[in-house]
Image 1 (cartoon, helix red, strand yellow):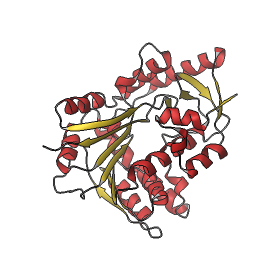
Image 2: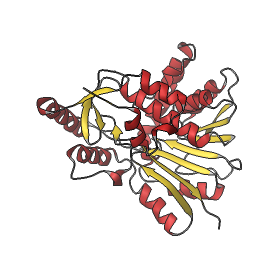
Image 3: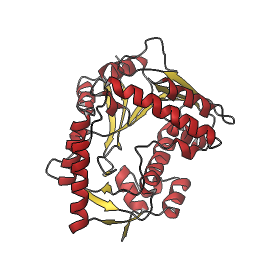
Image 4: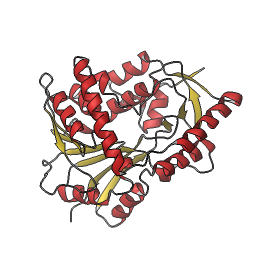
Length: 310
């Protein structure tokens, strides 16, 4: 049985171990990050399961029918949140599953901790948010879904003005309910990233992020990036699956490629940003694949950029 250590997390995030906050260090020490690499029969069974899931999958990112699914899903999460007494645990998105094999460093792994994926991503979000958002008074999450990132941000860095934007009204309603808890300053807004609102202005010196949201646009992200360039937030961070970083010569990656294509998740996002950088429209300061993901793909590569003058 292996274990992901603080050094392993640091390598995954492209930082030094001493860069972790006390809270991150505590979580890494207290949570169960043991795992074993699947080999032989168990690996074959996992690969067969992935292939069957890809063949049977009928979700199409960006389709009109998906909006109805999101509307119903966020409505159910809102009800669960209220019924739980506003427990933040009820906000965990359904795509973060328990008790399934996961991806780590080009292999399938199995972990005894059923919350391994959530715990790993909580360490990552804790580090990412405190590192990059602490000096910004206003933070916007586009495609905020259940608002679980905003709830964590409000806990980690209290006193910030937080905005959650989504194209589904039930998500907006849910975010506003989260904002009604305690002294939170969290506000929900309707916003379609494929057709940005010109009348929605970002505050000066603000920060923007997406978390598994660009993937759902079926490649229709260019207007949103143009909107951000016009609005000029101080920093933009995207945590997304990045199709172009998969290695087609690695079987685990190749299956993620097939899944990504089947779902019609966004492609060409990173190349588009790199093209804008070559034209001196923005500066990319970091692109880092975590080499960690769920059974079917890796959704947690992070990209950081800022607009340039002119």
